[in-house]
Image (cartoon, rainbow, N blue to C red):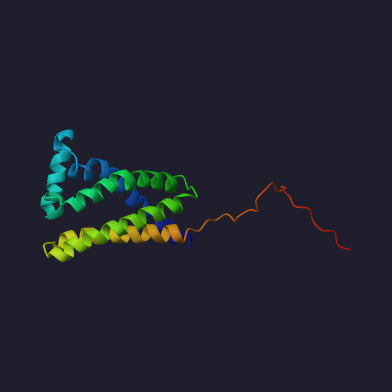
Length: 168
C-alpha cells in the first residue's frame, strides 16, 4: 500500500508542480497582454499553440478566458499549497489534492465539451488533455483515500505510558 501511495503522491506532486509553474507563466498569456512576458516565454507559448494545433488557446473564446481566470485565482494557489503539503507530508494536503482534482475535472469537462463538440481537435491535443484527466483522477483518489501511517490519537492530553491494570 505504501508503494501505491507513494506513486499517487508522485503523480499528484508532478501535476501540482506543472500547474504551479504553467499557470502564471503560460496560461496567463491567454488573458494578459503578450508585452508583459519575456520573448522566450511568448515563443514557447506560440510553439505550444502551433505544435498541438490548440485552436482554443490561439483564439480564446470567452468561456475559456473565464476558465483561465478561475485557474489563476483558484487552482494556482491551491496547486502551490498542495505541492508544499505533499513535499512536507502535511495531513491537510489530502484536502488540497481533492480540491485541485475536482476543479481540474470540472475544467476538463468544459474543455472536452468544446474539443469533441467542435470536431476540430487533433488527436495530439486530445491526448494532452487525457493526461490531465489522469492527473485529476489521481488527485481525487489521493484526497479521498488518504492513508496515514500514524493512528489517530484521542483528543486531550495522554500519558506517555498508560497505566496498567492490576490483575487480581
